[in-house]
Image (spheres, rainbow, N blue to C red):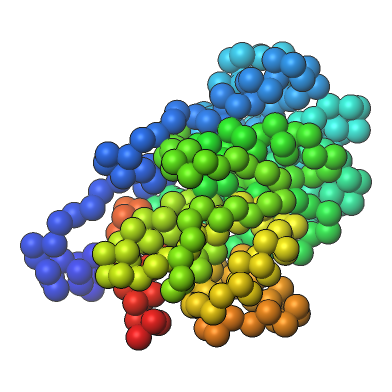
Length: 340
């Protein structure tokens, strides 16, 4: 019997959660959103930076690069379904003084073009900005499109900066800063109607910096990407049970903001939890754990909330997020269990 049939048999009255499997919104029903923040930020940047180019592998519409293409058609290149060619074409243009922004899906960039990025872009120190949609579990299309290991793959590449923004504000502010960085960048990308969260916390993106969004005495939640949105939701849920949760947003995965991380973990004894939209192997959690161990800043208890080391199911995102423990409700339940 299939898993879907097993679930129906177990609870015939269970509501069916349906969303588009490929491009599903992460926003709640009443949550504020901003349309295409990446595309709009790149258009704005292009007004004063004629060297900014846009390249994609047949995915302009699904990475919001089509907005840049409409604004600057002479600075846009559609490379077709040829991701290796895409990366080397961007490298060639960077050698000529341009700053290419390259878009595709995170699974294709990390798995299919790794060697081309390593040898053609990173080793040369070229200012190519690789901005990729569908990171982690942001699509229900299954393992072929779920880039649950992209951070693990790219963290090992020398001189590559890695950014994992939380929301529309993070993306809008990150675009000009990664463009100004003199070297290659890999940025995970949320597209379409992207939630607006961080504007409520007097937040500004700074490349290489982590930001404490709220303080708390019982738990320190360190997070990146949309899991910072989940962390803030989790903190509100746990507040109802008198559990005080701090949230530290870490949008730059590499290089880590070691000073802020060590300060926040070390300044008071509390449960430290790293939450990420990535495999439990090789992502932010392991990076933070290694930092703390190497520096001798050991919290009383350390836990990870992440995706399992497995090929994940296909389906509706709300169902998958609950199944794999990255919904706010699932996170709150696990943290209460760890606090005992």
